[in-house]
Length: 112
Length: 114
Image (cartoon, rainbow over the protein chains, first blue to last red):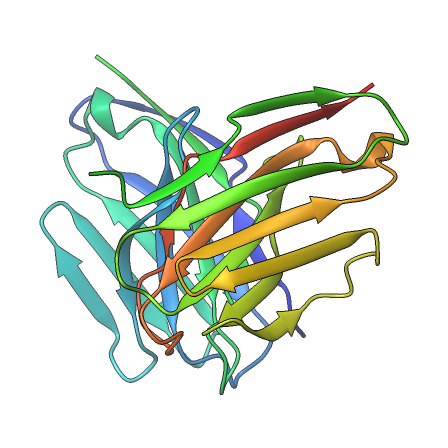
């Protein structure tokens, strides 16, 4: 119930393509869903986040799509660039806490 | 103007030793965290402190003891190190520890136990 499942484990995309990373959760009480981006040798950094009362959030080339009934959410990176190459983590927060439960991560490689 | 800093960046030690990792944030946040990232990149929270008070303790072995001398610092002391403790440890901080508040991560400390 406390898990967040993430797929794929790795993703290779051509420059200019769309990168899509999916996450699924079991606990319907989760109420905050952020995505973190981690470059090699660095700590994770918040990329974009969504709450379950909206179905989509867009910030620049990054969009979260949220499907509450399916208990799934996904990150879409439009016009993917080599600089987007990093590991992406979805996460979820149980109610009443600020604890982040992370997915297993997706290593994205964008080739020119 | 580093936001969340950790020392040391690398730590190599023998099994059975005791070691500490230090964390400091200059963001004025009052909640700090320790996370462990294993060799498969899996990130898991270990502890959180709010204004020097322990809030989250995720069934971490007693060999791990966080200490918060003030709200800008959260250190991690590990006794009797084991091979399985090898990982990257990240400190993070957030404002008030509220849901939806961004957590800012440090650069990590890579611990290798031989």
